[in-house]
Image 1: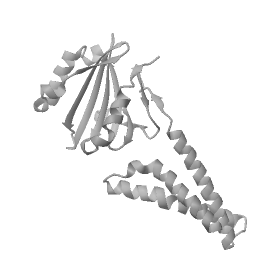
Image 2: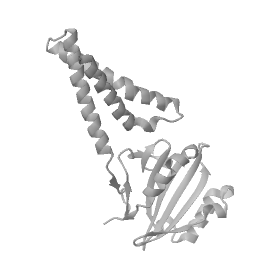
Image 3: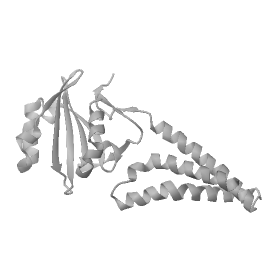
Length: 238
């Protein structure tokens, strides 16, 4: 009976852990190995080691006592994992430091990550290594971009021979208190990887704000709709 209970608990933990870590099921072999470890090996090994230590401390080291201890620890792992999964399922709001807008993310699998590209700090919110969003805010005077025409001129200078006017079309969008324009184009990053870029540019009286979403091209079908939906949750900070 004790082994049946252990098997049932272990299967339940595997299901919960799969729901937590299924984002690792990609064509990346390292991510798949992490998935296998986190879902199958880590819970069982943790339950065995914790139970073994406790049983040795309390001097209950007979086989059936060890199995009971492992069942208790596996039950605790199941409860904690389920609670984390439930909490991760709630949507949450994110306001990047110094920006006048807020985004809503659908769950806590999207996590803030601070990077330092080009010598400055930039906070990204990432689903995994294949999809992320960032918010960059500046004054119009400091950026020398006051309207969409100046934005297109700046992009033409930035992308040089990769700039094609029809690829950088600006589509109107609506955000309270801002002039809003939306762009959707492919680009090649500095490391040579192909990316899909979704760019929302916002102007109020003084700010120039850009919401930038980047998806690795092979993962566009997987993430495009959810990323675009997140971008269009943008609203002014109250």
